[in-house]
Image (spheres, rainbow, N blue to C red):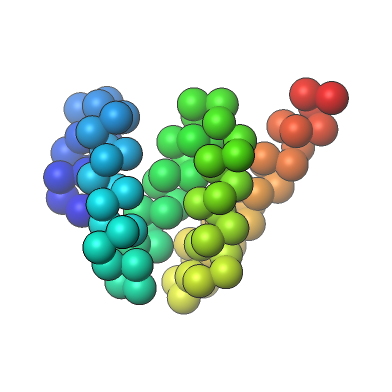
Length: 88
């Protein structure tokens, strides 16, 4: 996760995304993977990729054990729904 944080701090979103996706793939049930899913959802929203954002949000809400992250993911889901409504 440290490498992903370094990439995020350097504003290297593609490297951050790769590291975060690797964390989710290798350690899907670890707490770091929940944080990674949240960051991936935020990145997807910022990149105007609602389908990708929704996938990460749904995974976190369904599998997350960290209540604060799950609640934050639900907030992102509301933002996503609002953006979809504004696009219509």
